[in-house]
Image (cartoon, rainbow, N blue to C red):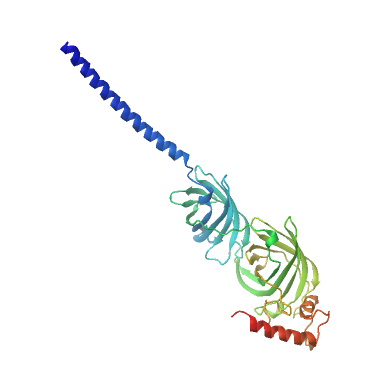
Length: 370
């Protein structure tokens, strides 16, 4: 009997020991499985994580066989749940040089591609090359190569969840804009480098008279020489234009199609002036853009009657222009200038308009902000 009892006790201890081990192993496996399930349930990357400001640089070629670092900022303002994103890439060391891009990110693997679609400003004639790489959600970095070139690596870190939004509502766009066009003419190049040119700077004003639901626009533009201009290009003119506004990126494009006031001949009697296409992007109360020959920047504002040099101010310069015209001192007004100088809208420009302009200049300078 004692032997049977002893065996029974040993058996019981063995069973308890085995059960304890089994329970411990089961608990360990359960913890591991739960952790794995929890880890796989959380997507490593989300649209909110992609949106924001990314700061860093990429290595590019300097045109002489060497490499140069290009500090840049990637602003991603839209990203959907499928990983499709878009925004603006801006070069830090080159004023206003930037382009719009679109991309795609795999939220599970972090792999992404990014490709430019159109320059906002490209005064230095840079090229756009596709980016491909990987986003690290823990380090909040994106790294990889441009154009699948291992020499052209890039590295960016997310520095802010905030971003600038470029989508616009055409119905809310300002209608009147003043600014300056800064271009070149008579350019001379050596070994592909610009070595000499004549500056062509003009004050410009555009008035958008119609914006359709599909983004097509109509309006008119006026231009006069800036005080920075070479006198060879001392021109005044105006024309009607048509164009488009893109809602996603706020891009505006327009092309003159009919002269209102054909520009007067320049000092050396050269004629044959053309209406060149303008392209840019509207951001708040500013338009920045480019043409084939230069860059332009404008700000929204109210139209100033009597602003004869189109600098969005009333001053002595405007009085001098009107006085020269009234004295027939080699000053010719086309239709654009005539309408701007007609202060009382009586379809005539005379001394009554000069008196009205003098009063307007005084009132403007007394009331303008310091």
